[in-house]
Image (cartoon, rainbow, N blue to C red; front, top):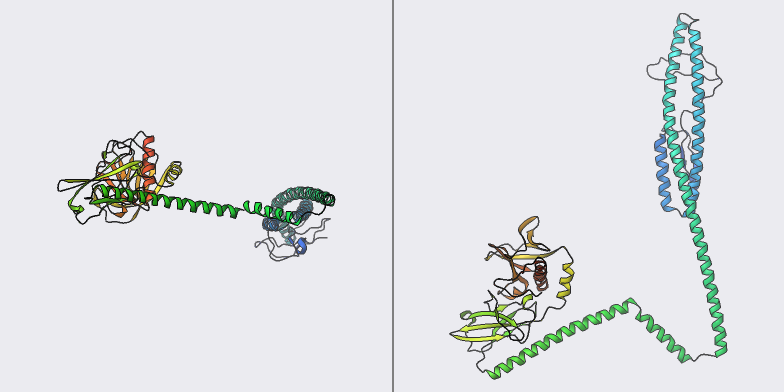
Length: 494
């Protein structure tokens, strides 16, 4: 026997309804709730006033399973998924039972409504009103039952999805367990084979030692020392020590080369002083790319350089034609890549007297600069940090950092997002080292982007300045442009 209540909404009146008999037993109106309890077991939660929806339950349990999957081993993971699969099967069975119970509810409600309809025709007065009210309540119950069926269908789909996921995960976990087991067995077999080989080798060595007698201790000590030496040679630290030693030897070689050049220069100065007692000036400074040369007075009778006319030249080492370096009229000159392999000469004219000074030999290239430029050539665009010293021949007041971009097709000077100059390689563009200036001449270059726009740019180091010149001339040469300084017509040599 089942008593039907009237708690269907706020619009229903709370009055007594005659009991109705049926051969159907209603099951719980909520889907069972589960959670993972101690020892990772899925247990059923007792009725709680705050019942979660099926979506929330599925989402929470899926998140817990995924979180545990990250922490468990392969074997534990397979066990967990098998337990989850069993729980999903249990949930699916309960959903099937609820569906059957829902079907029985529909049959009950139909029978109840038919009975009330037949009863309404036989009663009058207040009893008829009660019967009509009962019929309305049955219809409302049918509507609620239909809604619950929709929810049940949705919950059933979620349960099936969870069951399929757990089943696939369980199969994957079993596969992983089988693979790990096979791998472990293979490792065990390999270990057993290795142990057996070692035992056989030990037995063979023991037989050989018995046959050949006791080995000489000194011989054994020599073998141990040789083994240690071979081991030390193969250690990375030893290789690094050898590299450091090689680097130190290179540095010493460069220093010895500089000393040799200095000695050659002093020898040439002494020879000239012996030949010409009226020697007044001499060239000083390293004769290599990345440095600068300056005219130094070596006699008290020498006139002031400010009162003299100065002009620098470059010529081939064999004493070929002398080429004038336009704009190089200062006592200091910093060689640029064009000057490598050439002899520099400076003429000093004072009171009609002409004094000629030359370097002791050709200008030497900078160590490692060629490899550095070859590495930069592979890039599409190379950036150099510079400071604008002059713009159109006027000193630039700002000392802020700018960026010079040397690309395969163009050069660009910018500060942040602001472009100061951007020009493609052309016959109007000029680029060379600064011809004059002070001690920083070796770190500066002259760049004429176009007619009416020129810059003197100071770099962070001599290497950066020379690399920028060589890189730009290399890219310009690829565009059939000879990028040189003012009035330079010599063939491109970088």
